[in-house]
Length: 396
Image 1: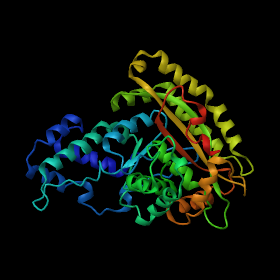
Image 2 (image 1 turned 30 degrees about the vertical axis):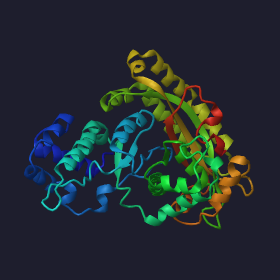
Image 3 (image 1 turned 60 degrees about the horizontal axis):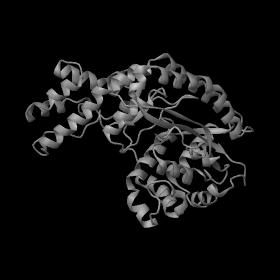
Image 4 (image 1 turned 135 degrees about the vertical axis):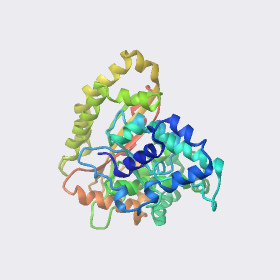
């Protein structure tokens, strides 16, 4: 389902300039003088009507659906690269609203001609490159930064403050003192909390893009939603090395329509639907086994297609680790082991806001099921990485 505000913005841009939204059009736009660009900005759909909630109405995820949330503070360049790549393996993604809710303006009260033209080039250029995927509903937008409450950051900062150095081994935080970790964690914490907020609302799937974010999930989800509910833990559901393609959005959109990738996405949705239906008496092993058996043939087909297609081989530049972790209700006293010893101690002290509200919402939604929700990881690594190093492998 195409998002109304996204279609309204694309229609407005194309109607104003009487041309399809392409990168060539964007390059033409930034050459116009300030007065013309002022008029263009003044008619922007979100400037000429109330910023009603309907602009950002998002479809709720249905059971089995995956919609990874790209970071609230992820740069447009990174989103442009990651969104079409993720869309090979999932049905839709959720990105920040900056491309359709711009801040540039050429008014006399705030005139920054060079910076604003750069913003037009970046954000409208992003929208132009993703146009087809926006209009078929594969790319959805959320005003994540605006909707984020400042106190939502507190529990995540608390987890970092209370964590041990060993939790950050292999990450860019390795070897840093607690003070240094806090100083360097502001943006990643803001990103993380905003994504948990959207996941709580059922709009998307929490996504880790590097080791640090994976550790944050480890440190924050191992806690009790409230005193009357079971504690939660993360358990690995499945992990695969998938081809990393380097190509522009239009080429990746064409790859996305190939039969083997369509089959993978359909099979993944069906398999995750079956996992979500497992009763509370099931365990993480049942979920892992179910996902592995249902996806084995489809994954083999994707790898075979990537290996034998000359076009895909030319695009392949490495591997991405694609992994899913299940947020599962834990039996009292069942969270044990070195990996969880410190994590539970840190998490138990976190009693408020972003993460606890997320866990409470997911538990209420899936009270009678073994898996409350799914967390996803998507980051670069080698084809020969050891399975024990897979995302979420330490978590169950």
